[in-house]
Length: 159
Image (cartoon, rainbow, N blue to C red; front, side, top):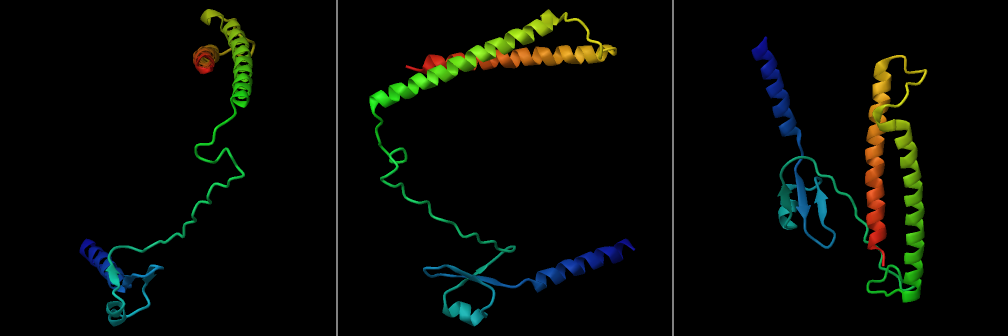
C-alpha cells in the first residue's frame, strides 16, 4: 500500500512537471514575459527561457518629483530662523505639558501602589488578583518613569 501511494505521488509530481508551460523573457523597451510563443519565435526574438516557478509581475509607479510650490519637500530648502525658533518654542511647550501630565500620572500610580503595600479592594477576595494588580502597578510605574526620562531627554535636546 505504501509503495502504491508513493508511486501515485511521484506520478502526480511528474505530471505537474510535464504540464508546466515554458515562459520566455523577451528583450525590448517594454520587457515581455510570455508563454504564448513557440521555441522558434523565441529564438528569432532573442528571448531567454525562464526556469523555476510561476512569475508574478507588478507594475511600479515612479515617484512624483517635488514641486517648487512645496518648500518643505525641496532638498536644501532653508527655514527662516524666526520661524524655526517659533517651532522650537511650540515643541518645548508641548513637551513640557506632556512632562507635567506624565509626572501627575506617575504620582497617582505611585500613590495607588503604596510601595507594594496597597490595601486590598473588595473585588480582590482572591489574593492572586491583588498580587496581579500590584504587578501591573509596578510595571506601569517602571514604564512611566522611562517615559519621563525620554521626555526629559527630548527637552534637553532643544536649543
